[in-house]
Length: 576
Image (cartoon, rainbow, N blue to C red; front, side, top):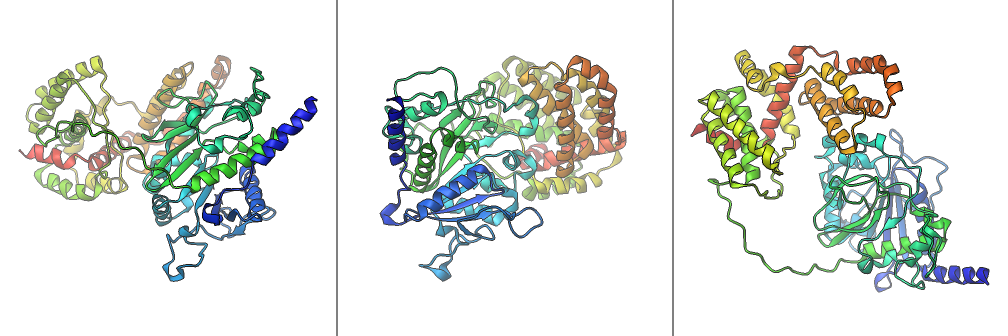
């Protein structure tokens, strides 16, 4: 009887896993895009090719060849129509009414399995974003090989169009790989189960919209219960945060994995971009559904592609709120005022001449970070007043003692209130390139003033800093460990690389690897290998002399100044 029940369940689930639902009897046009023929890629391709015979889908594929080669690896079965490059046209008006495989308008849905986005040109990335905005459906599947590139600051400019599409902010996995394990399987949680999209309903015949997931995770179906996880997923790519306006449909059940704000790591999330939608999957492990019922897997992907091809419903309008107090030049937001103060600190530290300030003003037009939406932080009146007084003292730049007193007063309030400001500045490529030119034009006395006013006489030597950090990072808890590691990596990379982004990333990677290795050691292993670890630290940081370190710190500071979007305002304030 039990065996008969199981057979009936399987047949019902199989019947529910129908082909992709096409609109107006037209097949859904799908492009599969991947850097490697992963399990997920191959299973999805096989599923869609089978459905193609039924007329519900038209499937093409572009599998990126290994670097330095023109074609994908031989031996990979490819049943779909193959492209030899990623589309580089939005639409081909010359062939209007026909299909051009290299025009994005020839597709309704693109499924990207951990592709190497860096191998697309910036124009291709921008066209992909435009395609989504015009109504395309994009499914992005995170993976261990290429997704991490989305977290690297050095890639931000080239990948900006791609980053805009993701509903989540990817975390730099290099910084916490030592804390992560993938030897246990975990279930998913569904925070909006009652509103979940149809593709999450793996079996419409089951009792409950998400009951089939219980069957997969716990080996139960219907009202049966089993508290132990029988099957699950082993990993979800680390995420810093979920973008405002995005919806999380499923989260990864590992209690040790959290976003930077302490929330659960998203496994399935969605955001609307223009008239299109982007669905993010945190792992290419959905093929594990096949271990329970192949029909569940088919139902998931057929439903997901149908869902991605649909135009999102317009969001409900929200009542208009009273506008906030209008920001004026006389009273900028706390975040803008803080950035302006940072610019004034460096203008004061370098003691630029009038001619040099005029040069900075000209350069700023092409080196400043482009305007981006920032939140307006709330601070106390006392904090804003202290920040304003420091601003005026730095602009006057006439009384060192007064500036020190205002800095001390601001420090005291910051320690008491711990305000969170959206005042970070991203270094631009133009600023990095021009920082060296500005540095070359400084007088020796200005560098001396910079060293004095930035307290660099007492700044730790990068080698000493790294050697000292080796025992300090051991035993630190997760959040403290991450903060300490990032702080040391940034400090050392600035001292050794200056404004050179590529060199800074390489130095940072080596520092993170060394500190991660140290953090994972037992006390006995650390004592036995301490000399070897210190030798590695010396190899990383011991080659730079004090003159080079000070030059690099000055160059990095100039790149920060040139990138500061409030530099022009700071120069005007100093000229008053």
